[in-house]
Image (cartoon, rainbow, N blue to C red; front, side, top):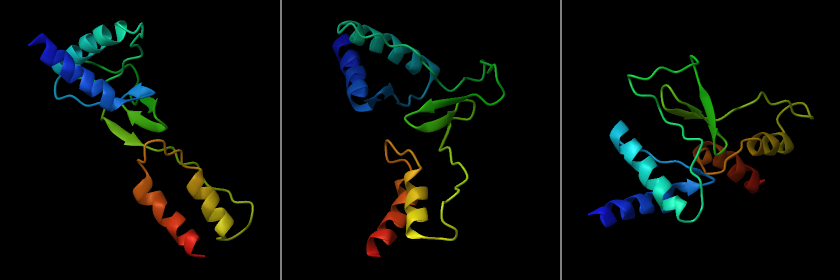
Length: 130
C-alpha cells in the first residue's frame, strides 16, 4: 500500500516538475500528503523541496489582498487560483503596424509552457505567409 502511494507521488513529480513543481490536488489533505511524500522522495537524492505555495483554503487568510506569485513566466493569483501573463504596453520603434512590430510584440510574451500558444500562434503564422 505504501509503495502504491509513493509511486503515485513519484509519478506526479515526474510529470509536473519543470523548474517548479506545478500540480493540482482536490483537497488540503491531499496537498499536505503530496508535500510530505514529495519531501521524502526528494530527500533520497539530497534535494530540498522548499518555497511551497498553494491556493489558500477558506480557513486561511492572505497577508496581502491580491498576492501574486511568478510561476514559469506566468502570474499566479493565489487567492482565486488564476493564471495570467504580464503584458506591457507595446511601443514599436516604427509607427503603424509593420511586420517588425507584430513580430516584436508576439515575442515579448514569455511563453515557457505554451500557455499563450492559442493567442500568439496566429500572428506568427500570418507573418510566415508574407
